[in-house]
Length: 87
Image (cartoon, rainbow, N blue to C red; front, side):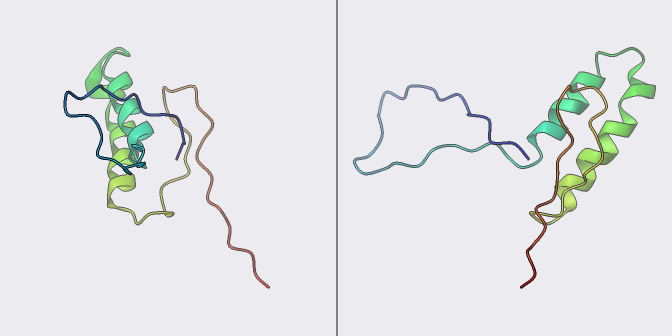
């Protein structure tokens, strides 16, 4: 979905030497944020079902096959699928 940086917390144990992994947001993180935002946009019984259906479809989909419908409440561009180039 998006490649926004994920905030990191300082650990009292630090990082092992040579560990250069960086956390990445889950591919359906933006859909989950859309559901949470819907909870605060009026009557949740009316505002949550649409974003939740898209979140559920995203979670059940395979990587790269996430729904491309626009977000209901987040001001983000709708996700796009990367088309495989045919040779």
